Image (cartoon, rainbow, N blue to C red; front, top):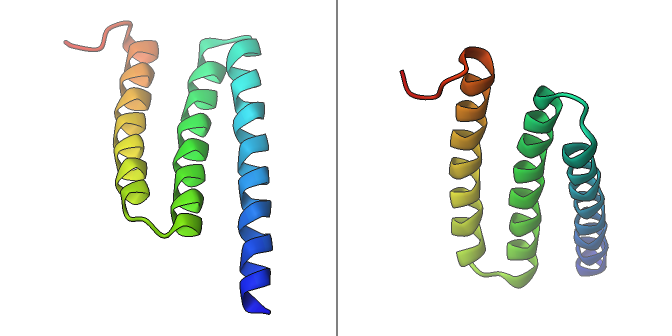
Length: 93
């Protein structure tokens, strides 16, 4: 019984995160301002990281967790650098 509930919950999580990823991708393409695009990119990398984590839980492999960690670090660096670029107009002072 609990395996069935866990299977249903993981499928629901994959669908919901996939929908959130698609919506943030749409916002990144449509966003009227650069700030909207940066926020959409931030949401996209978080959704991608969570999708990989859910797939890793379904498969039972630790390699997916390492990939999610790499995505999280690279996404954080990209968001900080883009925010600094939007605030000051340059990344490196």
